[in-house]
Length: 414
Image 1 (cartoon, one colour):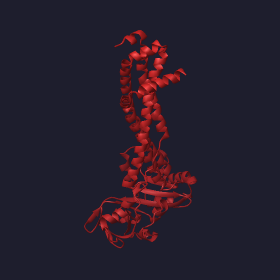
Image 2 (tube, helix red, strand yellow):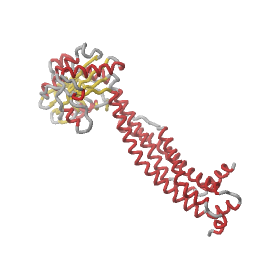
Image 3 (spheres, one colour):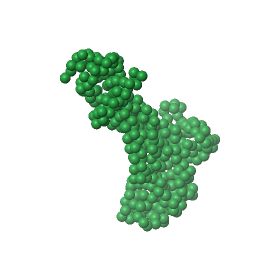
Image 4 (cartoon, one colour):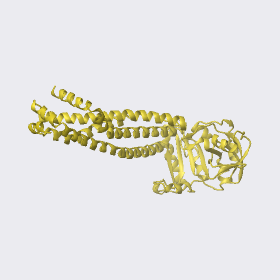
């Protein structure tokens, strides 16, 4: 009963100075709002990216040349490595080498701009197989058709282009049957992709897709590949495919020590784990910065509570005169501090959820991304919990100062 009565007194004191109470907890509101909003947006971004990678399929295995990159500087070495060639593709396609592989699709990137007449555009141009797009991304041409296995064997100069490429080069004209220029080679457009936006590792709207043989031998004049997409027959056999690919490549390259591999293999799981790690680290970093606002808010609460103790010296003396103990006074001021911070935490959390919902709506409408609204209950609990801890930590000193006042001297205070 004594605690309940003390709580009522603390609440009445805060209610009598609503404006000052609100200004006191403004730092806490901003801190909790920032933390919850950052975690919500970070989780939303992570969910969006991972959902895009799931579109590639859980059975995808990617073989790349060069050493496994350990930093940004290593990616250029990987891109220009020449360690994967036709003989490797032939070995991988042998059923006895990789029995659980359904398809082996080489890929090369073609840098540079694409032109049509006076129009010039810089898309993502690469040589691949049409089946890879169909099976991995489940995309069919909106108009025209894909190139065939015969086109790949004959190194036909044909291409399928994305909707953005079509818009930039042809406007409202029909591109089917027209020729575009890629690195001084005329290539006939035989199909266009529907507008899909970002899918996993590239934007399908900005793609120019060629037969990989045409891109490799005629346009780039190279004899190596930059990526090999391998599709396993089931998700359960992914690890077997990875092991078989590594064993086949080491045999092809006469490698006995895995530390000396001149290739590396990634799966969707590897990509998901890497992205999750990056987004988690970035979120933690931003949350740590936002937490500074909680510390600032706590200092503000301590300052205002000290002022309140001075202003209410006579009240403290009167309460002690009618029987309140030092512990009662300490409890009252601690409750006031915790009420302030928890109230700020609740307001900040509500504001963060509202802003996260607004941000998701704007991103969906303005950027055509399927941005998910994530409500991080863990972050909400953490924010309110930390706010409560801040109230206790920064409210303890003023509360102790109040509880130590002598009742007679407090009653005489002017």
